[in-house]
Length: 111
Image (cartoon, rainbow, N blue to C red; front, side, top):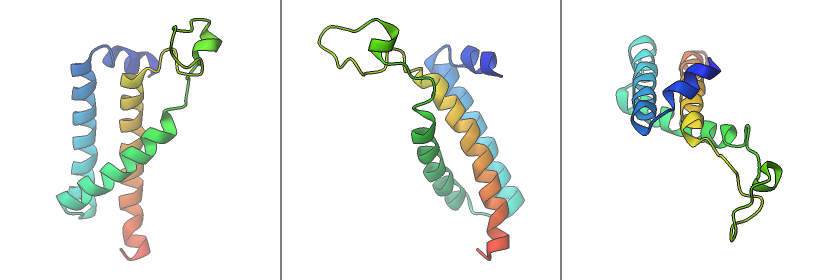
């Protein structure tokens, strides 16, 4: 799975396509399977995606000092290779699962 994510994050367009397709599938499952409206599914997914992004961002980050390659004029604690495309795909996968779980719990909570 890790190698697949690295391959899919090879370009901006492939990353964007993966994020769009997986997000669309998750929202379609929530709308058709759990009775949310499209606007509600999109809004809930947006909030979950951003929260998951900030949870995923720190994983695997090495500072420039740790990597031994400090760029002159930059903060030594700045990430050497942040891998943002990979993190966007991971965020999308995790947020999609969380969205489906949250939508499944809504009826139990009376929402």
